[in-house]
Amino acid sequence: GGLVPQYRKFEVVFETDGTKAITTDRNALDRKIESIIADGVDRLQVITDFDFTLTKFRISTKGRRVSSSHAILERSGIFGAEFRDNAKRNFQKYYPMEVDARLEFKSKLAAMEEWWGKTHAA
Image 1 (cartoon, one colour):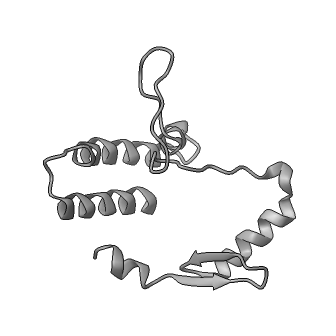
Image 2 (cartoon, rainbow, N blue to C red):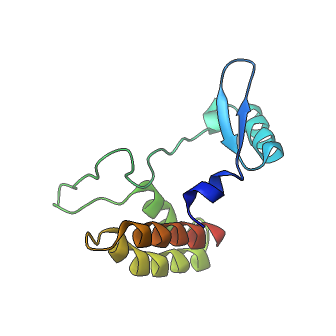
């Protein structure tokens, strides 16, 4: 399954205030929004551009590429050792495909979708 069939599973939700959300589960989205409101702004953290899709990566003062937010969460242990180890194995398998300029786009896209799915299913 490429990108287009996956998007057919999504529902676009428009609110009366003009905001828009895309979700696969309207009830889960509503519960998350209610939880965010109930917990208040002091407990809200927003992580954006977790995988350098919007911005260029940074170089540390030691001259090394810094980790993405996604990688920091993966390595933190917050999701447990099994998730961390699975994410590491997936990175070792799929990252070389991500940066391989010789790999055909269709093959690369399929591999990236597989990587995303395997990492987030854990």
